[in-house]
Length: 112
Image (cartoon, rainbow, N blue to C red):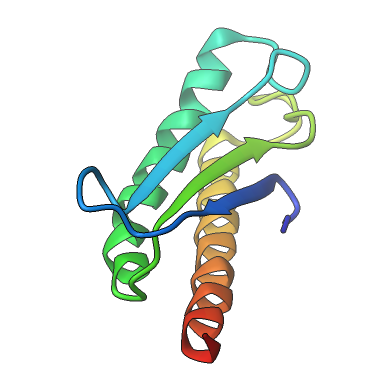
């Protein structure tokens, strides 16, 4: 599933007795965010969103590996877009994507 900025890929797995139920991974390629500073910024925003969404996703009793990937080139921050507005937009995009994923997983768990 994807949104404007991100693609979410998830691998549902059987429950295991050890380890975490939800694991997150983040990829930001050089082709989409040329500067290292920008890649770190995007990963930090994604990690924060995932950390805050994890309790809600964990309530659905799902075991999954979730990967969030930046799918399009970042605008030149400071020239094309104000940094603060970009951070808010990316965070909102990630939150909505994780919320949609949680709804789909919850529905799948209830149907099973």
